[in-house]
Structures are given as C-alpha cells and as structure tokens.
Amino acid sequence: MEIYRCRGLIDETPAYQRKLAEINRLRAEHPILLTGRFTVPDGITLDTKNGLLAAGYTEGDCVAVVVTTPRDRAASGAVSVAGMKCVGSSAAVNLAPNGIAVLEFRK
Image (cartoon, rainbow, N blue to C red):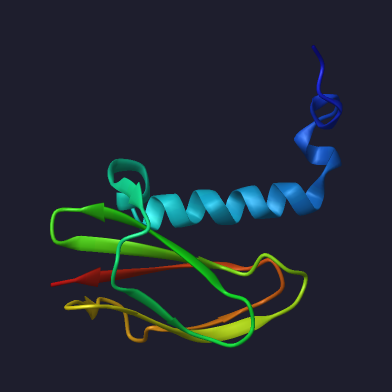
C-alpha cells in the first residue's frame, strides 16, 4: 500500500523539512524525550486561555513537558509542575502557530 505523502522526496516539502529539523533539534537537546516514559502526569498546570496543550515524559526526578498549540494561531502561557522547579530560565512559553516547546522540571 502506498501513502500519497511518501511519493516524493523530502526536498519537495520544505515546510515539513523545517518542522522535522525542529523536532530533531528538540530530541537532541532533551534526551528524556527518547528515554523517558510518556505520560500526562498529575501536577502539570497550564496557565493559558488560548489553546496550549501539554504532555510529559518522566524519568527519575525529571519531567519534560512538551507544550504545543494545535491551531494555526499563536499561543502563550506558563507551565508548572507540582513540587518541581523549571530547569530553564523561564516556565513561560510564547509559541508561533503550530509551535512546540520543551520545558524540563526537576525536584
């Protein structure tokens, strides 16, 4: 069975190629995305009014929260995980349409 989107080369789909590069960069920067257990842990809180979604990957005392907006519009908000602190400089996200971000939290 052939799938239509797989009939060409990746060079023929520049938007898909850019998104794939972005996802691969996030995987390299956050190894927990490949080694952790996918979950939607209790305690993830999104402070947003405009459509952000979040899920987590857990490993040991670390939770990586993947935040995305499923719509073709920008979204922003803050993420917190009960009993944990954000490893990066900020737990706030400002995403472009169809954007994605990863925030890591530790106890």
